[in-house]
Length: 339
Image (tube, rainbow, N blue to C red; front, side):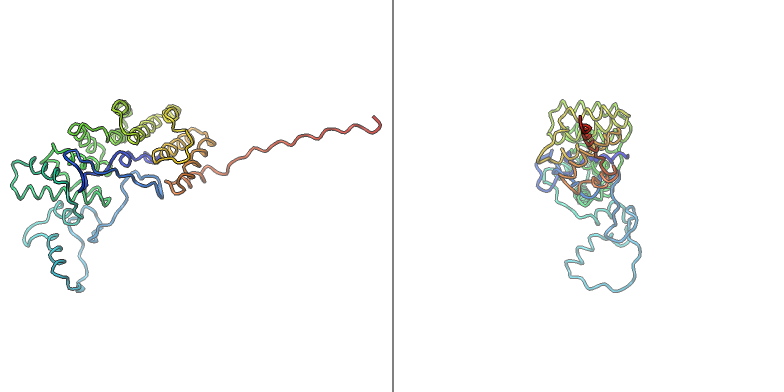
């Protein structure tokens, strides 16, 4: 089992999007991104993607040469928009500029844009606007699932404006999605200190779990419980803490952590967090050799959402259900004739 095979994706349940255009002031959240549990269990690495300009490598700064077939004539507006994505003649195009040009830009909340400008107090007015544009491009890349592009775009902003909570939040989440655990930890710890928020503690726990630091996971879990978080955030933290115990071989402790918190209850209309806990419980029971219990919880997940993760495949992998045959009652012996 890999680190994600239990269906653990802390970012999905703990608010994993940076501030949107409708966000509020300095601590504006990127609205809750609840990834649907469709198709397969959350992957351990970001899924592969293809750049819109045709480049095969996401780290390339320019697209490969294309055939010289004539392009259709563009309107004046289209040509203007395209020219913004090109470097000026004679100038070199940096990777960050290429990302900013290729990523769809989103408008930041004015408060966050102002924070970035104010933090860059030694920069010129033009440099400040470029930092805001980088942040907008990073958010656009993150929204499109291009987490490594988002991380590369937001890094220079985080270096110049390290005290802007929203910038550190995006940098941390993009690093987490890119499986850069130490970098994600550094940025998200800074975000927590700047915003006094514990909503991303499950993500930090998952980073420590990936770095094989179960004691740190337990410490963060204790901190999360004492902070009275949102039920979804608390449930996600419990999932990560339980999976961390299982990583150390304590399967019974992992199962008990979920069971004593009510994760075993059968519900008519389960929420996302209930389905995720059932899936993990099923996985833990299977690893512990308790196939009937594993089947029970996988079937709960299947009833709640037939397309959740890889639950149908996991159920098939358990094999056909063995049904105990009822013993037939023995027929009573008839007395011998004449007795």
